[in-house]
Amino acid sequence: MPPLTSPPVAHTADLVVFGGTGDLSMRKLLPALFHSDRDGRLAPETRIIALSRGGLTDADFRGKVDAEVRDQVPADDLALWQRFLGRLHHLTVDVGGQDRTGWQALSRLLAGHESRDRVFYLASPPMTFGPFCRELELAGLVTPDSRVVLEKPLGRDLPSAQLINDEVGAIFDEQQIFRIDHYLGKETVQNLLVLRFANAFLEPVWNSLWIDHVQITVAETVGTPGRRGYYDHAGALRDMVQNHLLQLLTLTAMESPARNDREAIRDEKVKVLQSLRPIVGTEVGRFTVRGQYAQAGDLPGYLAEPGSTPPTEASGRVETFTAIRAEIRNWRWAGVPFYLRTGKRMPHRRSEIVVQFKDVPHSIFPGGAPNRLVLRLQPEEGIELHIMAKEPGAGEIMLKPVPMSLSFGKTFTTRVPDAYERLLTDVLAGNPTLFMRRDEVEAAWRWIDPILDAWQASPDLPEPYPAGTAGPASAHELLGRSGRAWHEEEA
Image 1: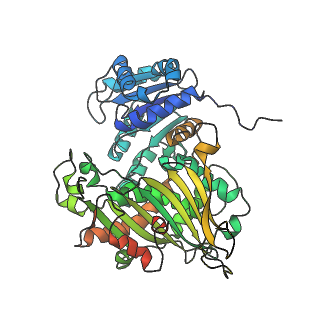
Image 2: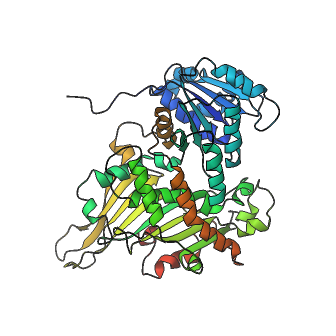
Image 3: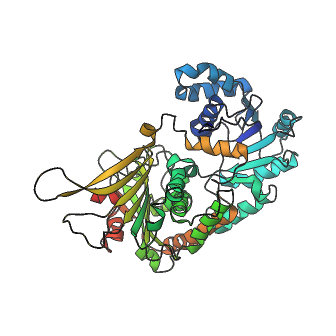
């Protein structure tokens, strides 16, 4: 009998991380790469080269990584950790400046390995993407087997996203560009596709005949301490909805692809974005909500977050919470609202997709409730199907909703990998399935931009909500007008 799982494929590559000493690298990329190394997915020759303006030597960088990342390494793996540190290098580069020393040093380090895959990971602000790619071309470092990874957010609106895509696309072919959204690397997100397309009982009811509405929530308990300078120019709509929430929406709503290949899934996701009903003009006020958390007890408001830049006029207008009622204009989903919600300083940290089914056509039992499918992305990944069951006891039949639960951590004995592990493995393998294509990114911005424009033109400020609560009152009214409620309000 053949094995149920394939042995890991060890990829040989030079992985060059621009912004290699930054927060993303230390918190996510380097721990993910260590686990990939430990699991045998990095070939012995693979090198990790960090680029920054820090002036560090290799030894300095390895010491920094050891100090900041080692606490994420199990005690039994310290020997493997030392091997991993040996893969690390650091070079100081000047992007857009006159000093070519760092680029010459990178050329020397990569020389002789032109046949090896080269992955350039841009863990840096989006305005650096174009200049960095031009520097790579100027230094003669882009080979046919090179790939470039772009972190979100990709621009601030459609024109800026198109400009970045044009600048990067002038150096790299589209198949070499990997636009990353780490939510797509989560086990639950990938299981959503398996749940839908590998189980016959769900597909017949996955449509407007049986589904009442869908809720997609990404809630955070943290605020923005020390980050107001960034958040003033981003806000929840750009920071979360344009990428994370719309990605979850596309995977929930997409049609079954003809095959499981690199482009078929992305083709279907783009079709969903192109089918979103535009929210424009006065409809923005009816179908969207924006809020900003205010002080509540010991929790500071957005304008008083410690360690942040002084508040400006833009600070008072930025949203830390948004909720949207979206609709998809196609045969499968006509008339089914998709409620998107994200916010900071919420009462609980959770990311989930809730598929609310319609009630049974005719119930012969009192006290029933519609079925509900909950896909949890965090904090504990898993799937729950809420069904009606009879409470034990004699006498009259009493119904109670009960969950049929699948916890990945409890069900599977293998370690559940971090999302970045999966995505970095796919980058090294050259598999773009879980990454965004140019037309996908731009279709998302086309839907988002009219909402942004209406908010910017409005004299109204975001509606305040006390820090630690579930958002402004208007968010509850968004569902309440149609007799619906957010998932946790019915729990």
